[in-house]
Amino acid sequence: MNKSTIKNNFSRNARFYDQHSNVQADCSEILLGLLDNTSFKSILEIGCGTGTYTARLFGRYPDAAITAVDISKPMLNIAEEKLKGTGVVFIEADGENLSLNRHFDLVTANASFQWFAGIDAAVRRFSDMLEDGGRICFSIYGPETFKEFRETLKEYLGRETRLSSSKFAEAESLKKELGRCFSDIELIERSYNREFPSLLDFLRDIKFSGTRGSGLESEVRLGRYMLSDLEKIYIKKFGKIKVTHQVFFLRGRKRMTPRNCEQNSVIASERSERGNLKDRHCEEAEGRRSNLL
Image (tube, rainbow, N blue to C red; front, top):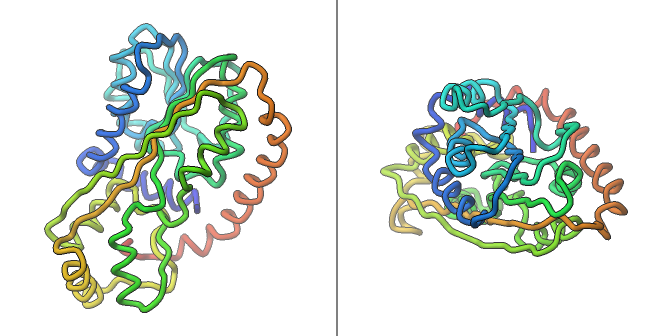
């Protein structure tokens, strides 16, 4: 994932985010349910965005010390305004590479981990920031997200075309990475279906919600005539412009003595650094791209 492109997408469209993030809002309710009746004194939220989930966390745990992190300053500005006077601490930072000199008893995130270069190194960092027995609970988009659009593009172009969602992690991979540092792991899968009046309305929605990620492959340009042809194929295949959001919900408890976490942390960090280096090489080229997606 090109982190710079993703950050810019969220920042440019921050003021529209709440109008186009209904799926993310629904996910935040499920996350709260997964926390059961557990009491938390110190909470770290990764990728807080405009603060919708943050506000719900504060409503459930008004006495907890909540720290909310996001990579986009414009998104944080909206979140801070929503939670003014609550005592929630907001930090502008890349949650994937976050390092804080304090410990929490809950690390949580709503639909943000899919933008990480590598979930393995991030899991290690979050484990390090948790108290022994602390919890992790998060939602993350899966690779079947926008599968209808991907199939439509394939039929039109005559070849497979990778969306950003094509690179999202599979369920078993997520459980495996989480299992290196956490026990009592649970995974729930949900599919959210949304319908739009037109293909253009769908593309605008994922633009303003940030779920388009880095967009399409660089050589694919969505012009007016191509959009018209794609919409005809889409409706012929699926009857309407319907879209799937695949979301995984995971929770786990930090091992008292993480067996595999320590020995895999160096490997995970090296993988993350290679991914970040690749992103930096791609940023200049990505910055010149101008796709509708």
